[in-house]
Image 1 (cartoon, rainbow, N blue to C red):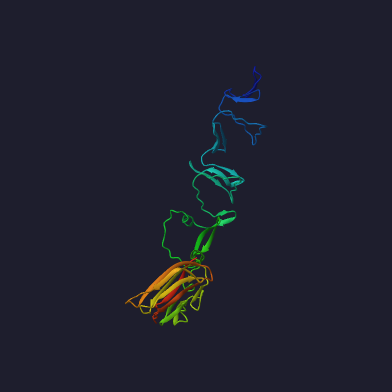
Image 2: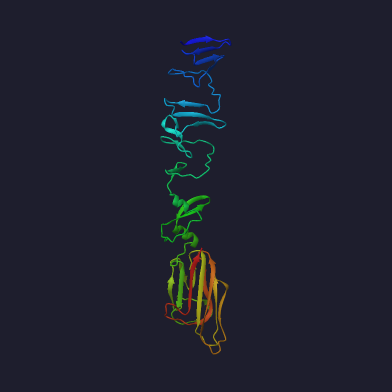
Length: 326
C-alpha cells in the first residue's frame, strides 16, 4: 500500500503501493527515482520562479506533446517543427515555415517601429508599396529603366511624352516639348527666320543699308518673330543666329562693290569686295556668320555696289538668317 515516510535527513518520501516508485521532498526540492513527475491537476501554480536547470531541457505542450520548447545551450529556445508562436489569435504569428524560411504573419498589418530598420538581403514586395503614405505605383520594369545598364530602344518620341528631370534635387516629370524649348531655346524655324532676295538689278552708288524690300526685293521668307524696315532686320528672340549674304556683282570692271555685315549698325568684320575685275565684269561672293543676338537686335548689309537680281525664288543676291538655339 502507498505510504509516507520521513527519513533521517528530514525529507519526506511518498511511495507507491509496491515501493517501486517514490517522490522525495528535501529542503524544498522535489526529486524522484523515475524520469518524470506527474502533477495531476487542471491548474498548477508556481509562486515566483521556475528553473529548468539542465541543458537541452524541454517543455512539452498538448495531450500528445506535439508542441515543444527546447533549451538550446548557449543560443536560446527552439520551437519545434513548423509550429507557430501566435499573438492575439492564430492569424498573427512568427513561424519557422521551413528549415530556411522565417514567416511573420498578421491579419492586417505588421508595424515595425525603430529609429532605423536595416534590411540585409534581397527584398521582394508582392503587394502595394507606399512611401510616406504615398503609394508607389510604378512597376519593377519601369524602375529598372533608371539603371544605366538598361538597353536602349527605338520607341518614337511624340508630343505629350514625359521626361524625368532632376530639378535641384527633386525628381519631376516634364514633357518633351518643355525640354525641347529649353535645349533649343524655343527654336521655331517658321518664326525666327528670314530670306530676302533681289528680284531685279539694283545700283547703289552711295554707302547705305541695302534695302532688299524697297530695292526691287521680295521677302521669300519672313518669320512672325522677325520684322524688316528699309533693309534692316530686327529679330524678336534672343539666341544664336546663322546669317548668310550673297552678292552678285552687276557692274563693269571699273565699278567697285564694298559691303559690310552689321549688327546694331556696327560692322562686325565681314566684308564683300569687288574691285579691278579687268575682263571679268560679273561674279558672286558669299559670307556667313554665327552670331549671338539679344531680343530686338538688328542686322543689315551696308555699303555700295551694283547687284544682279533674279526672279528665282533662290535669288542670286540675297540676305537670309535663322535662329539655331538659345
